[in-house]
Image (cartoon, rainbow, N blue to C red; front, side, top):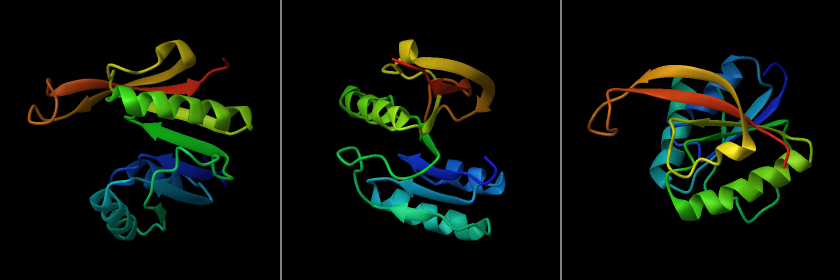
Length: 144
């Protein structure tokens, strides 16, 4: 991530944008439609001594931002969202932007479009997930 400009799609808490900055990204922005997520991003960035530009709107009808990397984490839990996210990510990739996808195996994950890069065991809570340990996978968006 060193010296790369990063955009975190559906950023939630901003964790990925913050991690990218901690790994040397030159700048990071996070987008989320949830006002609580947007507030959390700013607070979490501040708590970690980082600065994340917060985008508080749906960006999927816009062109991809002028960045080097787009991170799309856990965007595949809803069919309507998945149908909008994948074409947007393809358009970004076609413009030369690297696209990384993180996912714990959601139902609408488009595995045929992805190249698996890494697998991690992730602890969670059964209040949120069906297991207390899930496997999170990181993918690159491959060619069409």
